[in-house]
Amino acid sequence: MSTELLNDEACGLRERKKRETRRALNLAALDLVDEKGFAAVTTEEIAARAGVSARTFFNYFPSKEAAVIGTTAEELESYAAALEEAVPGESPLESLRRILAGMLAPASIDRELRAKRRRILLGEPALAPALVGNNIRIENALTAALERRLGVKAGASLQPRLTVAVAIAAVRACIEHQQNGGTGRLERNIDAAFDHLAAGLR
Amino acid sequence: MSTELLNDEACGLRERKKRETRRALNLAALDLVDEKGFAAVTTEEIAARAGVSARTFFNYFPSKEAAVIGTTAEELESYAAALEEAVPGESPLESLRRILAGMLAPASIDRELRAKRRRILLGEPALAPALVGNNIRIENALTAALERRLGVKAGASLQPRLTVAVAIAAVRACIEHQQNGGTGRLERNIDAAFDHLAAGLR
DNA sequence: TGCAATTTTGCAGTGACTGCATGTTCGGCG
DNA sequence: CGCCGAACATGCAGTCACTGCAAAATTGCA
Image (cartoon, rainbow over all chains, first blue to last red; front, side, top):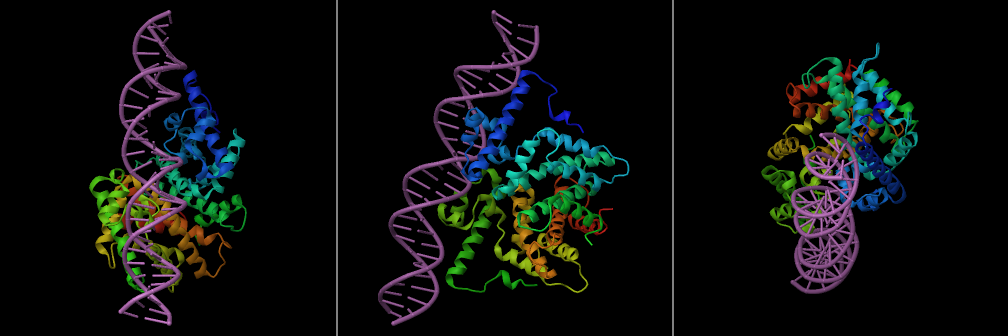
């Protein structure tokens, strides 16, 4: 599904180079965090390993955290598009379950990158605040998409934002549960969580 | 309910002074943010207005954001205690609705402080990431309390964390809805949100 | 090939945050 | 009451994230 969107399109040399640089920075950041831990990594190191100047780093990411997390606008749009198109017989909550689970699963292209991301981001407690901060962006994008799908004006109804926020929270709770040594496998727990949600949390 | 816990108890001169300093710093931070906006305030200013050295500021708060938000361990414990004690005929979700709504309402002592906090924290978009980061602390405290109330071991069941995370997300969604110019009053929306939750989000 | 727009880079500066060493204050105990 | 150890405040020096600015390099296009 729409993996093409993540690739090229509008492919001048300029655009391609920017994507490469961005990716190189993200990759360098992930590897360095993996090697030394988030706190011990400096933005200069990341820039150096990516082959750009220290100043250029901040042309691509507004903060060290953002470089490690690395969520691109394209990804956001891709998820939003997936949510916007209604699948027959699938409720918004069910769509969200599918899409959010897909965000965690190392599927499609970039299998290694996704796996690496997941491993490192979830293994570094220092990133937790930045990760939930990043969720705001995801929530906003998905909320707008769901509003369009339901045909309501932005902010006219509480329901789209509520549904999205709660779904994200459910996934995050499962991740947190995992990190605190909780029981069960992540994917299975996410399924259970959404079942609970649909049942009104008992 | 348990407003006493927030006050004195263990009241040597030392402890009292620490509380006063902490409070002075929090108040100074709030006022300064109100006057000039979060970005334009420096930790030195906050310390100066509170009458302590710049270095001492960081003995009380780990970051500028934390000083503005100012959530104390006592508050956390107080909310946790409120959740832990089961009220007959009240489900966990209903307890959470009551307690989280209470966090927003300028009630009890410190009416002005609470009102000021709410106004400033919600009016400053730059604080949004820090606020959701702070929610992690609240979530952890409430999760532990709910686990105790339900008599399950920490991490043994997904449900406590899921319930707490989802309830917090619901409240946050209402706030976000508000800030984005959404419809309705906050308190009424929170009620509606928890009704939706209990109904399985439709 | 040359021009205009975009991007990279270096430089200098601000301010958050930390470790350490030192002075100051508090609480208890003889 | 006075003394001592612990807790706390402070100053200092340093690191590093992040920013604005202006010059240099690169790219797209005529």
